[in-house]
Image (tube, rainbow, N blue to C red; front, side, top):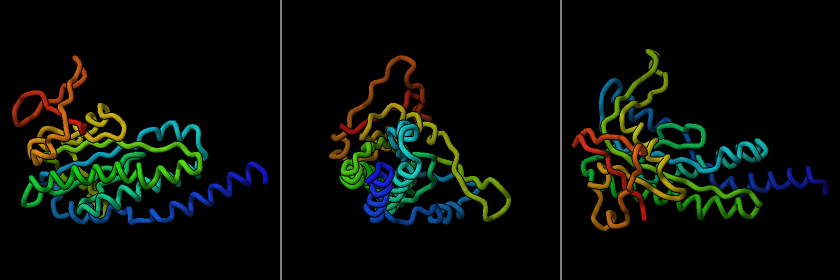
Length: 231
């Protein structure tokens, strides 16, 4: 068998393996929820999940293999988020941004969102990576940030069918926290941490920042915004 035929055969096999990850990755559910809040402020928990190493993969892997892996990642993350009653806001390259309404009990919701994030990491480690390893593909890792706060719901065009998005300080905080979080780790902002059950709080430790490494201010306290990462 030639090298090309072998590679093609491996691609078919991994496509077959990843067919079990065919979930609805539509953002329609999130769009329907946000449509009721256009041009208003609402409080949400934001989950920012970033795939580690995808830039290197894009430079070293054939396009068809990379697309298969990214699709499997997106499908699996969508499935986990929706199983915890969350919404997929959007896919941004190799990242997934989701949100959870706080509901009537913010404490229970924060606990649930942390467990969701842990399940997302485990889905990569225990669901997708064994398949990748079996075909000598690089394994994936994930880092996640969770923040809570007010966002503005915006529809970018007057056309009612145009996409709805969210804007806000907390989104910037979530993106910055991701850059300071290690692979296969989860970090939360202090507004989320304070609402967690003490037993879950004990699983985290406060991040210590170097000079100039972190300058985000908690708008509720006027002090430096604290960040906690999973042990």
